[in-house]
Image (cartoon, rainbow, N blue to C red; front, side):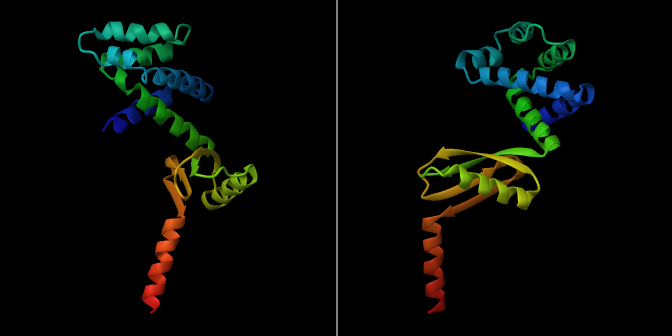
Length: 176
């Protein structure tokens, strides 16, 4: 539900800002959103004991020098008691920027580190499949195989040794 609400705010914001401001606002909102991972900040924003005006001032103090559109956007979020949506709004704005540029980020999970050549081959394969530029980053996992995910495109590809083994056994038992 909060993603739908956040998308409405992002849509409204995108209607009033230029393409250069989109990147700038995305960076600022991502910085604010990263602060929400701190328990003290999150508690302050979500606390019913602190007035909305104080919450808005708390956020605006962190973005001194921002243009009036961004300041007004934060104030509107405060007036509508939506300050807690800032991380979701930042994520939604990032998705919109990726969609406009047709560039996406994905993750490769595996227990072995892939060579940069293999990673670039995966990127090329995904580009041929999707028509989008995809930048993959690798993360270590206990997965016995490889899993590639690009959340914003809804892509998830999984190659696990256990799964191939199961399918091979099923094929053999069915053919007997």
